[in-house]
Amino acid sequence: MIGRFLGAVLAWAVRLVLALVVLSIGWVVLYRFLPPPITWLQARDAINGQHVEREWVPLTAMTKALPRAVIGAEDANFCSHSGIDLEAVQAAAMANASGKTLRGGSTISQQTAKNAFLWPGRSYVRKGLEAYFTLLIELLWGKPRIMEVYLNIVEMGPGIYGMEAAAEHYFDTTADKLSARQAARLAAILPQPIKRSAVKPSKSVKRYARRIEKRVKVVRDEGIDACLWR
Image 1 (tube, one colour):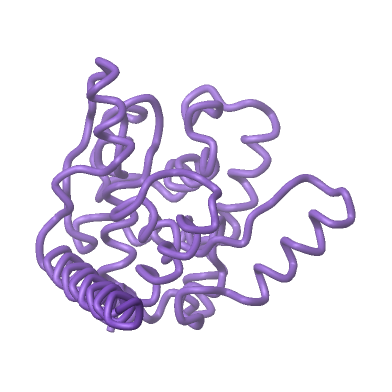
Image 2 (image 1 turned 180 degrees about the horizontal axis):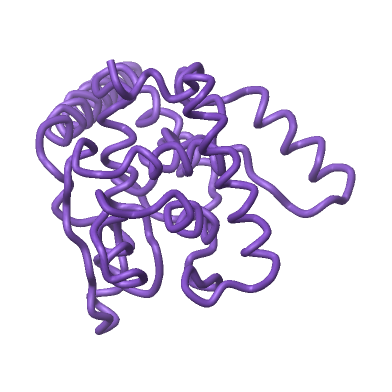
């Protein structure tokens, strides 16, 4: 009797897991072709009465300095890793263990998976789901789509999401007309866009933006962003 009950529970659990896998794959495939209608952070802001600024534009309608800036600032191995950069994770772990400034090892792919499908948090469940969705988007989207989604949904300030809205809000221009310096300024306020300012940056943010601007040239000259333009 107990054996039958346990068998039925196991069979039900397997069917549930399979159903969730199928649904998650369908969800990822849908976002391969359609812009995510809303993210957890956008919903949070809207619920809290914050005006949400966002405007979707394709990657081809952005200056190439933007993806180059975020690659230089956030994920130098974006084109070569498979979603999770083990070298960056190890470097972050070593830096944190040595008592240096706390840093993360999240790739642009991981940040995109988190922003598009999940909620903020540091639980093992959330991190596990992040890894799962990261592998799915790497497999089903490809690098250009991952970068396109990231640049369109990343938080860029209170109620500001995506680089088009950020370009308009901070510099009164569009994402295709940003200068390399402006693109570097936007990349420099990540991953703390609420605390940092792109138009009135602190001295440390200015220095960081100048370093990113130099990295933009390196990314361009060395073809580090080649996976985006094939």
